[in-house]
Image 1 (cartoon, rainbow, N blue to C red):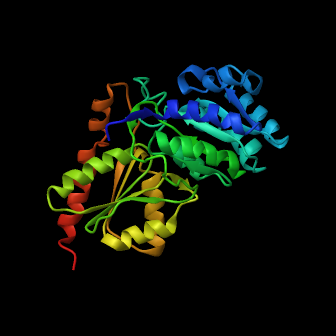
Image 2 (cartoon, helix red, strand yellow):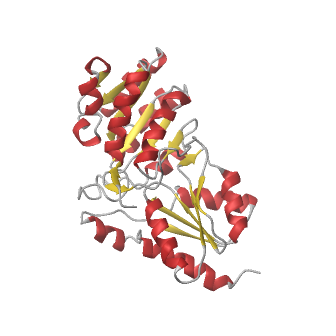
Image 3 (tube, rainbow, N blue to C red):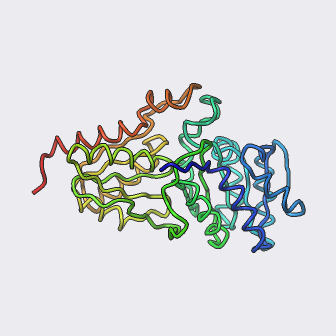
Length: 316
């Protein structure tokens, strides 16, 4: 995992490349293009780039209008603004009529460049999971971001694309087959299943390595699409090991942990622990300190897995 790519850089380049092959694609930005890297598309295709300024609600309305005319709009802003400031417009103008608008929320999660609790989006996935007709995607690395951007343009439905700020390790290779609504097994294991979404994936891999050195075999299932959820894969992972840990850089209320708990409660009750932000807001601090304080490190994932294995003993 030596190569590092920031999701926003992968997003900007993917938009440029997508624009070459799909003339329907347009991009709207709310005065954050240099941060989200949407400006890369604007530089390449100025006639298809619309700078609306600090007007997220209006941006969504314009995007909806363009979608109704056959375009494929991507909107660009921070996740905290997409999921809060523009929520009503997304609900009424995009989700209810099921228009193919891709709402990109950048700087998602805790690591938002020391901007603090006002800019840390840790409820965003839960907000859009609860909105009918919305698809929610949280890629795990730069390769998956690129695949998700291209898939989103062809999906034909409203999408919330959740992206983080910092460079993270690359897990997948270019042959990785990303499909909206499908989870993927990253590592086979027998003792405990670690289910991840977003950039918790490389931390889960590190946790699995640490557990392996202790004789605990971790099965890793990456869940990039939080809605529609790949319930079949989640149930299979739970039944494979009999123990489940979920890991997300998001509140455990309404995110991956909640979604997995709901699925297992109805289909395959399984001992589980949720690693994520508890019911609290964040604060401004260096990245490593935030991860430690809010329990989002590879060590926290490994400790949750150890706890489940210790509680239930060796499997028969």
